[in-house]
Image (cartoon, rainbow, N blue to C red; front, side):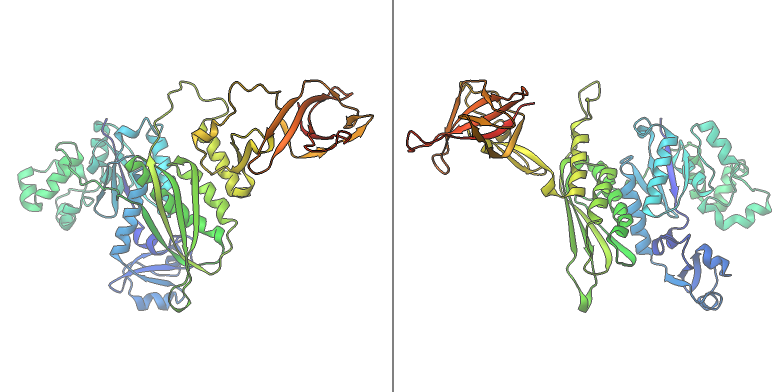
Amino acid sequence: MRLWIALHLPQLPLEVFSPNWSSDNGSVVLEQERVLALSPAARAAGVLPGMRRGGVLMLHPEARLHERTLEREAQALHDVAMALLQYTPLVAQAEESTLLMDIGASLSLFGGIRALCRRIRANLRALGFSCALGCAPTARGAWLLARASAGRVLGMASLSRRLDHLPSALPPPGRAFGAWFDGIGCFTLGDMRRLPRPGLQRRCGRPLLDLLDAAYGKTPELFDWIEAPTTFSAKLELFDRVENAEALLFGAHRLLLQMTGWLCAHQFAVERIVLQLEHERGKVARAPTIIEIALAEPTWRDEHLVRLLKERLSKVELVAHVIGLTLEAPQVQPMAPPSDSLFPEPGGSDEDQQRMLELLVARLGPENVLQAAPQADYRPELANLWVPVQKKIRNAQMQAQMPPDVLSLPRPAWLLAKPIALLMRNHRPFYGSPLRMASNPERIEAGWWNQSQTRDYFIAEGLDHAHYWVYRERMVGAAGEAEPRWFLHGMFG
């Protein structure tokens, strides 16, 4: 089923300059010295659309005045389109600050039209924009519904009935003829469709008929789809100097949403991201603060990255005010295919476990979250190293083991970081109680090249029936009457 969503951003000029326009102390956007858009606070002070600059300053001296910049509006609309690419690769830009999305193939993936619309609205709020959303089986129909805030329809019959009640001044090609339409009693699109087509074309031109035919599904629609760039680098200029690093999360989330759309458009997963906190420029310029996050498991979802950035930003101490953010994705790889397993993995998937470890690293620091790296060494304390969990371990190193024909005693689950010297009582090692040897000795002799060790290991049992891994240090070159030294090296469960 072909289905379109249109997003009209009615407050785009104001939101470009003042993301918190709904709660600020009065923002006004001017075009050719006249008010184009204004916030509720400015309207409450008496400012009206079309008013001149002098009138605004007389009524509201504290108003924040901004000159309209079409380039910044176009960039803001492009940023929104980049974020929407996570739902469909078919996103096009239409007139009057509107974006069109062909989401017919995405409905099942995102749980239906209601769930998809909720997600899109949430993304727009996170980006700092408001929108009027329309949904219809045709792109022009969705555009008209969005411009009129007329809701969603899923069938062609329902769309025709809904469009027939929209005002005749809504299509852009017909607005210049609004007085003529009112004069002949043509107030809705339904009235317009009932007019003779040859006369309507001679009076208003062919573009109006083409728009009506496309909206009602009479003719095919062609669009130029927005293409994602080959590499990702997004920049955001902040609207005030920020002193607290945690306050940067809102702006970083905006950039992450754009990156999510870019990743989905190219079917990529990111392995490393770099967030630059830009400081003052000019004579007091400072080098940007770099926050780099390396992921153990590549991802393309913004929720996990937001949690990681939140933890990292909470630990950053700013050396100066932040005036801008730049996000880059220097290391990506193709998305991993979905799991072949019919049922979910017990305890979560590998990706879920990696996300948990990455969150722990961001919260506790990389030096406090370690993983085991096996070593092909007979000495117990050197047979295993602990390295940061983010470090990649080669498969050959993970499979390091002794030759299969070597017979050895069972190894304890708890190996002490440093062996404990044991007392001797009645010529027997003592640890809470006298220890009785419960196994034959296993001699481990290695390290002649750097730190030679010669030890005889035993499994010992105490009076409480607990089992210990102890060794007797072999005194090379000592006299025969020398007392052997015993050490506790591990404990069995």
